[in-house]
Length: 373
Image (cartoon, rainbow, N blue to C red; front, top):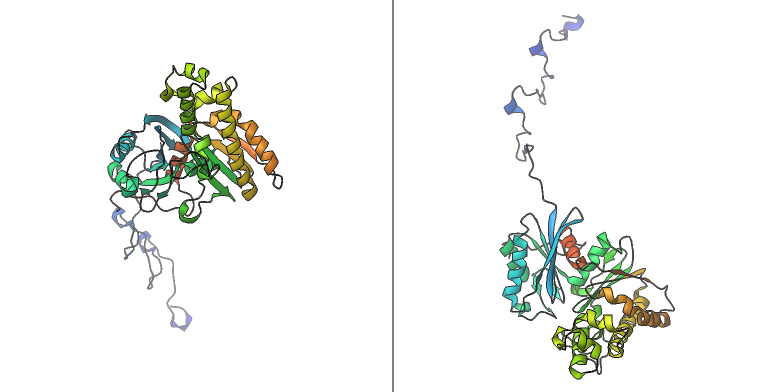
């Protein structure tokens, strides 16, 4: 005892006596393995001993009028790629072809599908598919594909998917304002501002291929209108007009190149023969002029830093450049002339679809889950 009658506080003399002060919040260190768990309350959690690694692999499918191109992307790098023909025997066969590709890539944790035309990414519907026949608007393509593959599915417009891939990994990386044009079977487009895709109302903006260039006496477009840009400079249009040259005998050089078979004409044939064949040269000049009008209008409205051109016909861009440059030099006097670059990798759309599956753009709807409809 000390003075005042209080008991002296001495340090415990054995190992077992060394405990935390014995008050209402006292705690002791557990003495056995079973006791080493998270606090036992209503939100108790135990630390997992081994976490299942999440696959970084995603699958991108680019649904085109001629072929379905696909890539697998892991950590931003292309691992595998390929293509299969696009069926033209109905929606069921197209969905079957997409699911068959997905079955070959079981390691992919998510799927992105890029398609031309208007779509509803929330309901997973392709509302208008200009270059592939079928009752698309009444089919829930996203949910059907998610159920068939057992993986989440993102639907994206093909041109926006191309643009997103270029913004993330390609020619427009680091650009704040850009315009994207895809020259393929048809013509697609997308717009980026402040480094983000701008999709417009109901996410349907950027349809550059359907800008009216010859609205009075132009050719009918797959969208139902007349004189759209893609009826002049799209791959299908160039092939069809080239076939007409063969049928009418207006281009002996083109007829010789395809063995006299109009249906065998490809856009590349028309572009390749333009330097030596006057009829093909007129088609190419007309296409370049139409592209120049469209791009000049967009440049004046949006003042982009760069215009990126991709798609299967983009390799022929040098043939169109004289007319494009001439028109743009006349009509873009109030804005700084943008750089025009090409992204000629034929799988750029599929890469963009895969990037979309890995991480959709900000504000875009969540992917469609299997069984989630």
